[in-house]
Length: 520
Figure 1 (cartoon, helix red, strand yellow):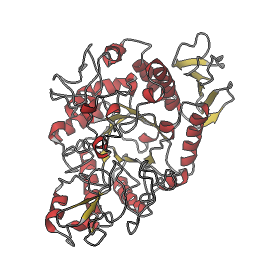
Figure 2 (figure 1 turned 120 degrees about the vertical axis):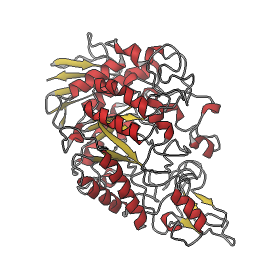
Figure 3 (figure 1 turned 90 degrees about the horizontal axis):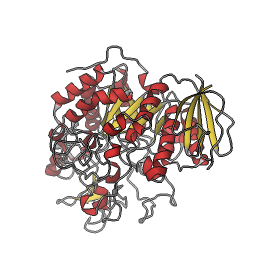
Figure 4 (figure 1 turned 30 degrees about the vertical axis):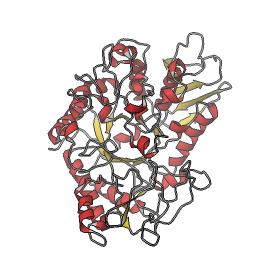
């Protein structure tokens, strides 16, 4: 089945607002407490009303769920807990009918250890063609009982696991996620087959997981790192195992495929050490765009926020790509919590939303951002993230930012499911946070997002910094939209212009930790 929008635009993504659907936590179409494609399809009209241009859906492929879907057993099918291909096609068709494009996760770096390829590799033994698709190596030491190198896993512990015949395989993440060898032609051919499978069904693009990590350092040498922190190069941000020159050949292959499907796009998850390194991924024959996480990692200070904007725009200035703005996602603490939590965090998060959505380029809204969802402090026994177990119960992982979305009602599960429980527990006291409760409240976070997304469509042009009161930042877009963000600690007078939208009451000036949009 092929689903397409009536009038595809080649560069629709350049200023689009994407809504990230963490599928397990968005909406359950049944009673098992796990979000699925049917639940997503049922909520599409509400996303259209919110005003988003596109979806990014986290993995829904067949998986043993060792990493909640990022351990993919079959990249060209649907995990039964989420539905089936027919349900995906229905969702895609209905999204397109509402004018919402659909992008999906691509997880090329590794597979599940339950994928047929890896099972064949284990059965075939050392030196076999089947093992050549992965990174199997002999161990070090007299009996080969030491790992081939000292690489740590991103999830904690070593990045190598030994198999019964004595060899070791590499996994940058969990042992259930063996890394592929992207120098192998069958690996590249399989990636192309996966791209075409979903593009032929009508998807509009891909978010590429670990886009900087598919090609490893030649020879797999030992690295210098701090065993306690996991940081490399004297506690710097660089991971010398990744961001290798060969990865760009992989992205050129992906781009050649995408260019055969007009109106489609890619956005890469690229963690690199500098804006100059990021720009290499955005050359005309590679990624269409890449996440720049400076805004997500910035502290709530004038200096950090302004630097995040400046550096992000500078990073793409010499490339064909737009900037790409993120405040929260499924791997990082939600910005309500990062900014202090409670009333303070919510007030700052409202202002941050106006900052993000006023900036030129693409914006990604994580499901629940539009409700002002915070992280949730879960009890130890409820944690499911492999980071928790792999770290020896020293790092709590990412479950706190993955709590299911509250839709309606006064008690858990807040309309998320028709069943009694959810895959991660939802807290008491969220009745006022639900989409239903916020729907009719003009002062709610949901109403703020709806208004911002509606008004954003009229904003265009480059960013020009403006003079601002001390402790504030201000800029104008070419269309005349002006943003003023107050981080001064006291109220400041409003500049001249028509107030279009404000994150707080501006009748007595712009309060601290607030933002306003004006038409100059």
